[in-house]
Length: 223
Length: 184
Image (tube, rainbow over the protein chains, first blue to last red):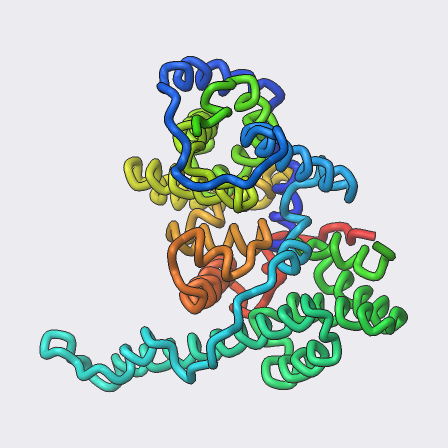
């Protein structure tokens, strides 16, 4: 069955032709040669022990490449990285969930200007849209809380969030794939490897072309 | 302190080599004109070169490339109104029907056409989130919008895609063609 996920999977095979870099560099080189050198920023740089900023930058590129190679990702398009990337950054503490987004609240509460008056029938879809945004936001916040718990290694808290998400949003949630992916993570973290494998298997059967699939296949492997 | 990369084209060239293909793919996903992707990549790295003195080595270079590529593509699209081309491309694809074999190449091209129904911001959020796995916080910073906006735009993008392909908004596997082999 073809799906949007399958399109994304197929898109991973699309690469520039082999000469792209040479062509672009040939056009770029004279342009950059014409740019006068600029002074660096007026900020204190850390002592790099003789390593120039340029080398440091190339070092970053080298590390990125080495890490990609280490995980077998050098030839792999970026779309296989999502969950790992999602886990790679600790989110800022989430604000207290608001019942209605400011923009949604404005939509609902602001008195209509004379020129914007609408009949009740016309206004109803806007209220429905605002309510939908509200639901999506609270679901999103819950998913972010789950992600934060997984990142902090608080797997029991993550599992509580996962249960809450399943109960409140079920399969109708916009972030069901993320929830199931985090469940696999949390189960692995709790050393419930058999359960994690089972959930991972279900994930891969339901969403074989998911951008998270590669990550899910490896999630319980020793690191 | 003078910027070493500004003085050392060889080092800048190594940087270019390390990331040119990544930028090419990202620009394509964000809706750059596929006929002039070379120009887009060139423009991105020209901006990178000119702004290297601003790069404070605090962030991952890729995060910086995401932001610059987005701005370059955004500028190009704004000036050439690429959205309309994206729409017409998709309509053209649908008009051809589904009789011919559905190759991976077609599927990949179809993805670009399908993404063409989204507006620029929705497309960027969808691409950053679903294809590149960036967090809402990342995306918010890249596009200078708050996380709630990222969430609601992502939902809107998913609904648009689902509606366009004729399925419910919460259907993650959006069906457009017959059976595909299961990934083992």
